Length: 318
Image 1 (tube, one colour):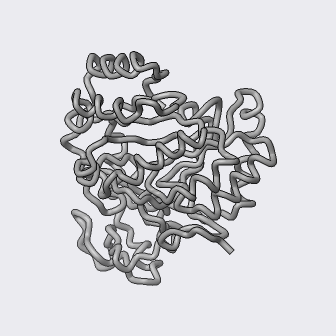
Image 2 (cartoon, one colour):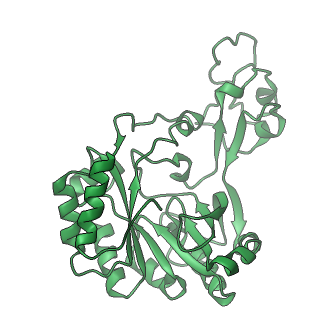
């Protein structure tokens, strides 16, 4: 039985939306990164919007749709007959799904001749996931790499992740957990004995601004970071830098003041990018990050210098 569930997450299997191999920016060495669905935050600039909801989702690429109507005929829930794409006029030739009735069953994916549809999310048991991780063991051994659990927020699935990281430790596989920090601290305590490094996201100090841009305040995130450092965890702090949001002098000095006295192994300065904006229409949502910009290179150098002056090891990127 899984314990410590949060909002129904966890259990004997989880929904994984990507397993990315040969990763060089998700912790030490060459790693395989496992992306789990479900996140307590809804960051305006999120580049993996399909990670936010825990359930499987249908991704639809209108540019690939040829209006053949096969999806409408195959759908058992009549979810394909919601809205015609431009130029469609024949009955049944409806491309954009009705997401209020779509269950992401995959029936339309199976018959789509152009690959306009795909399912984000596949169920894995711990045993199935470990079999996938083991495929990359030669790369781990050559590079001192391992597996990184990411998301979404992997610790929402605490029962599953605790069991997975325990098995990794038993097999000598290094573990990194990429976290937004917005979970109960006892979740961290449950995985701490098996985790080599935490990739901890810190976005800003002002809680009202944090709620504005991510949907929730940052009190839990800040408290967990402090407790995790006090408990001796190895931490790579990840700071996404977004011009006009968290790159001004006040924002950076606030972070530095908070980190004073905390042991952080490294600070990763992450440049904002909009590479994920094309995913939003594919899952039926609007991208809210049009106003965001990457931090200027000269300002990036100033921020890096400020952290280095405080004794932090700094790296630009993951």
